[in-house]
Amino acid sequence: MAKHLRTGEWGEQLAARFLEDKGLRILERNWRFSRAEIDLIAEEGEVLVFVEVKTRTSDYFGPPERFVSARKRQLLADAAAVYCEKRDHSGEVRFDVVAILLKAGRAPELRHLPDAFFPGLP
Image (cartoon, rainbow, N blue to C red; front, side, top):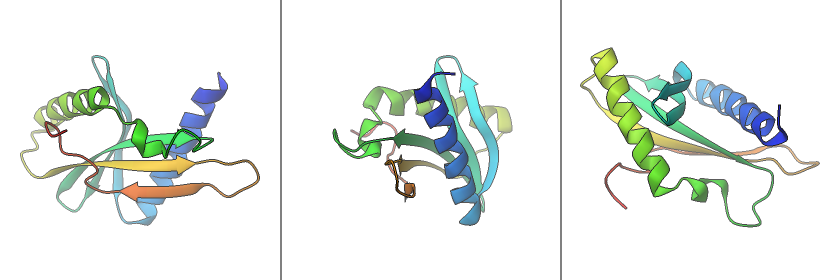
């Protein structure tokens, strides 16, 4: 497996444990629809939470969360709509980002950004 894929997979595992420790219940990992993949789908009470995990080994070009593009947000929103339809969920949804920075010789830095974006808004 390529190094960047291992880094991403490890980041997703860290993010899932981090969110579970905060009381969220992980429902799905790497849920796919068409060309979109939702890294984590969780529940927090009645709220369905779609989570994009961004893991980087450097912040030279900016923090990890900066790399969630408008195109990625749209793909996530489209996939989330299908997921809600399949689950017959008509309640509240939220789009979060977990940003992870893995610098050599340091403990991982995790930042949870709840309600990081709202689809359809720039």
